[in-house]
Image (cartoon, rainbow, N blue to C red; front, side, top):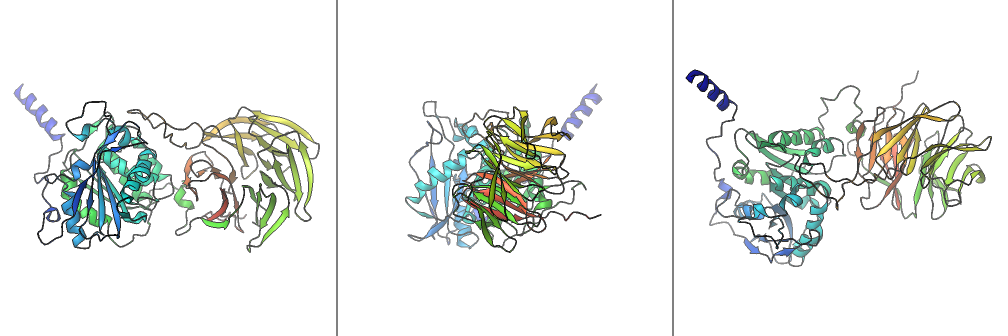
Length: 588
């Protein structure tokens, strides 16, 4: 009996990671030094938030001694600020800032130590870790907390100090739920924050944070510098495994070529012992001057994977093609790769040749444009309830069908036309030769963009008010069969939704799936609220390209250029292009 009990006890102990004996040790750069100028920590008035109504929070601001009156300062924001400003805690941030700024290892940086919000109608907790709004603010994905900082806190700072608007001079940090919060802010607002310090981050399913590794792997890399820290003894509970979550984050960031450092150690639990011990070194790494080139690690890709990284060319980003436009729509290309588009508000149809020469072809506003096998340019005019053809040689315009309300169209190799009629939720077939018009499908939630597979045998339709790209098989007589919700569009997070515990984030119902294009490999490019979503021929999401102008709608796209490897998009009042790494098709 004793032997059995001892064996069981030894096995139980063997399954528990041994804690490190050294634990937290005061870093030399966390020790006050008489020869170093000391900054000041100024307690601010409790802040009442509008973005988090009914919540109030304590906060304080560190002003470095080296900051001269009127001089612009760098910025770093800490969640759970009470812990970082504690002179006897593991972080001792004001002392560390004093020492690193004095040594030139950080620029003169204003630090904000901000606590989570609390409902003043509820009893005040013994410490701010228990503030009523902490989990909602910190664990929720989406932009609301980022907006709280950029629209409420930073403007308040700017009333007293000059804060750099350079995102590379702005950092954000936190631990546990504050750690995932720090990453979320930079993920949502890379134009405002580009340095992230996350220790023992809660990248688990408290409020959907476990989605981040997958999102990172399928989103165009952002210009972020990320320092992660976790240990094997961190939490493993119903919300998830913290060590695994952080290792997944580090692997995803490395795979996508981010500037990332991951400190992973044995033993430490869910505390600030390890994070505090290396805090000065983490700050030195975050604020170092040298730039690190993006070096994705795709060595583990399967041969057939058409990942986003396969498409991206180093150093190639969005370039402005045309600007000052009214309403861009109908982008398409001809066999030579010349680019065509319509400014619906002007109204006019233009061609931009391979040499960059711009030519007006017709005084018509057109919502969708495609060339037919007869060399005519076919277009949609929803307001006039008709489909037209344009002879680009002489500008002659002819009516092809009337009594319809087309949004976008495709033309098959046989010369048949399919249009989307968004308002009536239908896809309509048109035969220009016979004049036949009939409903080919009904019921898609706002059918909008439409595209053909490279062989012309599959029709794809994007859903503006839903989350799918639907596909059909085109039969010989033009009927559509085998209807399938083949591709799942990534949905925007609803900032006004309810972020429930242990549940995915609340998503908006509408993806705003819009204009579409395909390349010769069978990839589908779909404009949406989040950017250009790209799918492989099997319907799997390859990844998402961010919108060139994040605040304006992205409604149309096409592939053009002499090799068909340049993606053109209509984004608000501008047209942008981006060269992609699309392999040249093999000739027989």
